[in-house]
Image (cartoon, rainbow, N blue to C red; front, side, top):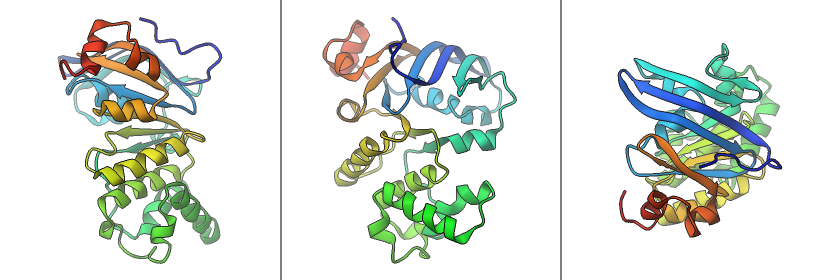
Length: 259
């Protein structure tokens, strides 16, 4: 199985021989994967297969776990994140993260979106106003909240909270947005809105999404990687993975025979 995505496509990440252990327990095995820029890459596979663990290696959030060890290479912007003295603040500016459930800070809607730019030293009120409006507009939320920017973000609905978190992530103008089951806690209408938003955002951002929802992966992703037992079993263009997978395990998972 080749992880190559084609010589004509720019890559955001090139992952080579990535292994990860929690203490003595190995969770990822020799991961080889290239992730294309300005596309949506879906990571699929059964529970416990290493999808979310892998996602959290891409911005080194996995390092927060005690007794965790990684070997191999995660190449991003010409650097191996595992061997360089990576500036985590700068890395998180370049790589945003959206979690399963919207997790706004207990602050105003405005302050949630302005948080990242302020962390990076921006204090000009006019510039912050512009970034907040632009980010909320890109997250398809501006029209709903423009008259209550000073209200608590915790008063928003679940779907609005998730879109606010997307606005917060893009306010620092990152290269990449990582999404870990971003619609699993949402109703169907909110899920549709977030999926539409993802399709719009890929025009500017590289998006990597972990999802259990096969229909969602088929609808919104350009490429798909199937994980099983901590290994990449198959990766390729989504249409091919879903219509004509090369590996039997991929076909069995997509068709619902396990997982």
